[in-house]
Image (cartoon, rainbow, N blue to C red; front, side, top):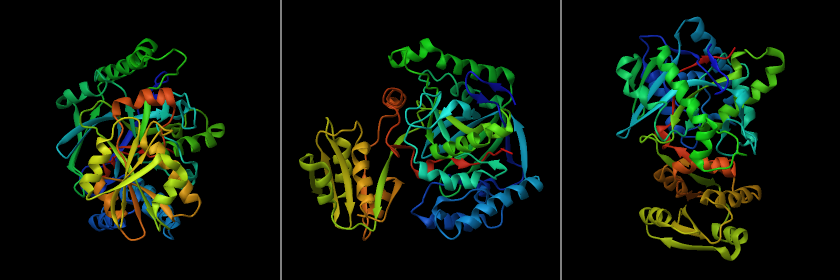
Length: 438
């Protein structure tokens, strides 16, 4: 495979389902979605039936910690081998241009492989490929169990580039009529449409590489952010799938001393997207607490003291408006309970973002057994529906401007975990492409 070490990328060999398979049944959404809505995955299983599908190659995280987890991991490994033996996958050498259409918006991405030697997910990382949010180390072991003996990787990882002049991906999208089409179909469960084209022309590949080299050139990098030259290059920022990429990195570090530098596990297949793509929106990730013991107000008062204030509001719309309209240094957070809606306001917050203000309070609450567990959900309707159920409590958060992402990570390091989402749940990446890692 062709490599570009200065950029930390590889032009991969990608596997796609052979012609004739039902692609709507083949592609399923990222495994970390709808973790508190098992009915979604039940519907997926019913839709697929016995058809070949990536559903059979991944572990939906709704099954983590259940009696079905171990058996499911083993079945994914066996199914990978079965699909390979039955030659259900066809290989293609080159980049793949991806177009996702949903809710009247188009966004474009480019499939390539990232060199894990250029990636570090640890706090304080200064690597060229960097996490944008804190990695929860205890979330890695089950993912490691899934990947370590797997023959294939199927990525839901979305990695961002900061390309305001739209020089890397957009020129390919403008020339898509010249490219060889690979797939073009409707995604299941109302998640829009997916197209893909093979980028095998060496001249087009060269243009992509030159544009990435310009983005990473020191003079361009330092002037783009107005930063001092003691900062290290950040070319690729992990937007979605941070824990999946961290899992790949962890396994690579384990096996690297014994397998040598050319092993396929050194690389991870990802889709890169431009943070300036007009079809890409940042959405907040909300919080839901389950089996809550007691009212949230005394807990917030103990944690924030006199800096905490709250008021009740009459509707979801009023709550969302109050959070959205908040300006100045104070942070506003919506609260949803079986009793209705309210807004918590924190004066003189210690964090730059409301999520950074809220999360330590929730972590302490969870550690003190004030609730059974926490989940991270997408969409105002979902957090309001779950938060209103008996024993639950929901927290509605504002989003962050996507244009601020790279400079914030460069200057301040990783964001609080689960700070933002690249679109809502149904806009998440679907498993489509695969790559051999053995």
